[in-house]
Every structure is written in structure tokens, then in C-alpha cells.
Length: 318
Image 1 (cartoon, rainbow, N blue to C red):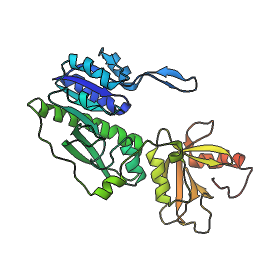
Image 2: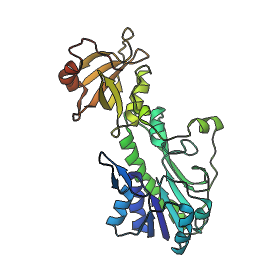
Image 3: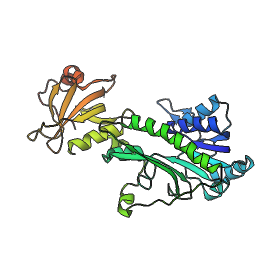
Image 4: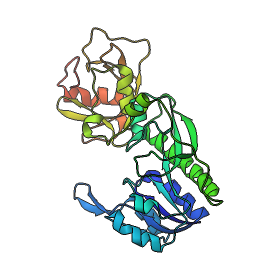
């Protein structure tokens, strides 16, 4: 089929690769270059770079309603959409006769919106999935074509979950497009408990969401680390310096009820142990101290921690 592919972030790359392998991608639509980094230089999106490397036509419309006329001239049979980052207007969605197919990394209707993976990890969810749905004018509200469950194992972080579901989402997208090649595919509406759906509507995350809150239970602290690892990383403050936390676990069977939340209660092997709000203990396993590289929590405790805290016996994170 003739496709127009919409995508921006790295999550969309496996889907783009799959579509170019199996279909005629007449154009790739992505968001315009944005300033990034310390120098605030304009940088292309990952999808733009990948599309150009494959010799595909790249379009970067700023006004999607105006873009509809250009899209009509390309005569697409269908749209394939993965992590594009903008809502497609109704006049654009009406163009492809086979529909607009979106890859979303959750079990819709749960975790609609911008941050389904991080939000599921922050919630401590043990299961998520991938949904391919036919887009409508709402925010991830269209009818479902294909949906598949995926476990979230203990210790699984955002980076691993992202790559796993991006790859599987690309495979499921091809399944949905194969159905569409024979006509409009069978679908079913999104259903679920209204209160649960409302609770899991996701929003863009901020730097404040990345801040570790030691007053929270140990499990919640660890879930926050998982949700932002390996990038951009959950952060803690100690003696006025930043410590990025990439890997952590709850220390089972060890309580520090007498210690204040955030207090360093020990270091064993490669781990730094910190008290949490429920009396539990969080083991920081991999960290990035301010202006330094990745190291184990234990190495940090033995080398930098005494210098940061002037030899204080039980320093405490903010």
C-alpha cells in the first residue's frame, strides 16, 4: 500500500523500518528541527535522520490543516503513525481510504496520552502492552485493531521496555496494515472502568517528576528510578550536588525505621543504602554523580560521598 508515515521520536524507528520494508512509503512526516543542547543548535528528529538515510521524502509541516492538501496529492492508501507528538486534525484523518493506524505502547484505554511507558512504571504496574488503533479526532481514543499484552518484570527500566514495545509495535503495525490491504479492518471500541481510565490519563513529565522523594515508600522510590532510566535519569540532591540514579532495588528484609527518610544507612559491595519513608531501604546500584561518569553506588559511597559530605557519618539526601 501507499503510506504516509508520521513519527518523531526513537520509538517510531522500528515502525518506520517495518513500513519501508513492506510498503511504499511515499513521504515521512515529522516535527520540525528543534534547538537542543548547550549550544541550542537546531537538531533533526531521529525519524528525519533515519528517513533521509533511506532516501525517503521528509516533510515537516507546522500547520497540519494546511498540510492536508499536500497529503491529498500523495494519494495515500493509509497513514502509519508512531510517536509523532501531534494530534492529526479530522480533515487530515479523512484522507486515507484505509484509515490512519497508530502504534501506542499501552493497553488502551489505559495510559492514553504522551507518557504511557513512564507512567506505567511510576505506577508500579506489572503489565502493559501495545495497541494498534484507527485514529479519530480524540487523544488516543480510536477503535482498536490489534492489542497485545506485555509483562513488566521487576527491575525492568524505561529504556528496555521502550525498545521492547517499539519493536513489537512495529510487528503489530504490519499485521494491522495487512488487514487494511484487504479493506477496512475489523475493530472494536475501547472499553474499561471509567475511574481507572481517568486515573491513568498521562501527561508530559517534568524535572520535578524525576526528583527522588525519600518520604515515599521504598518501592515507589525504586519505581521512579526505573521510570527514567537510563535517560534522562531520576535525580537526588546530596550536599547541594546532583546524583543521577540509574538502577535501584528495594532491600528486602531490611528496615531502617529509626532513620530519617533520605538518610544514608550503609554501603554494601556495589550498593549505597538509603532510608525511605516507610522504613524500608533503597539500594542505589548505578549512579552518575554531578560532573562524573557512571559508577556503582558502592564506589560512590567509598570515594565521593566522604568528600561531598565532609566525612559526615550519616549524611542525608534532600
